[in-house]
Image (tube, rainbow, N blue to C red; front, side, top):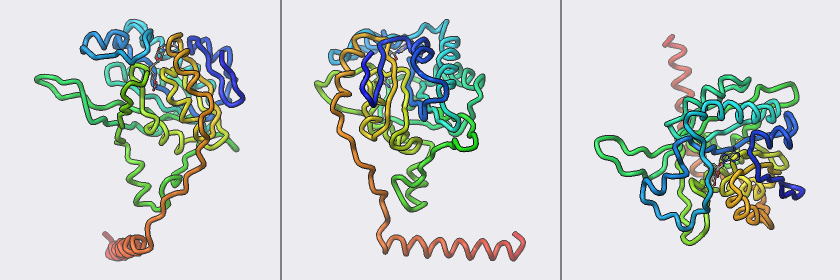
Length: 285
Ligand SMILES: C[S@@+](CC[C@H](N)C(=O)[O-])C[C@H]1O[C@@H](n2cnc3c(N)ncnc32)[C@H](O)[C@@H]1O
């Protein structure tokens, strides 16, 4: 176990780990990317990928036990989530049904189903090129003082920009860092940042049960959140835990405000729409 005042990370199976180390209803946000149950530990051989910079020892879950595995870790993660807390799960399409079935056995509510679109895919013949992940956004029901956090305007003050930033099809940037050691299926920190910023506040506790390259951990710490996480692969744990040390604490960004001219243009348009709505109502349409 490595523990600092802002983070606790364990080289342990997350199901037993959450039970042992994470108090009930103590976590504000879960962001995680579990193994996909598609023999991810062998994919490099299958696709002839050069994985010389990838840490060995990635742990996948056999398909036969994927349903039970999903139920077990999602039940535990849901226990850890505070009322109003949010959970984002990244999934491929192959075993998505197991994750959704498991979520439906909890008391969590579905908020959004997001598609993360990347600009590349594994080449195929006579079928579409798969180029997306699913990001399932679920939350524990609110309880009196404990409401769900959603910082609608953290990035943009104006509804038009914020609307486009929050569409349920999101780009999935690829981190291109030649020569740098990484985890298999490592996500980009820029991608994770958005979910952290919309669904948590400074000082909140973020959890990732499947840390991999510890991307969720690094981005949470950068944004002034606390972090708790698990990674079963000893190689990944040893390689990436040191990257959490001395992370720069980024100040909260100033939301982007449109220029006066742009605001005036948008206001004129909105005024027109308002007039049209009133007119339609008067005409009984
Ligand atoms: C898809 S990867 C996570 C990638 C991560 N989001 C990143 O950006 O690097 C899933 C990770 O879960 C780990 N894992 C598999 N089973 C686990 C378990 N029961 N408990 C904790 N970690 C596990 C794997 O070794 C792998 O590193």
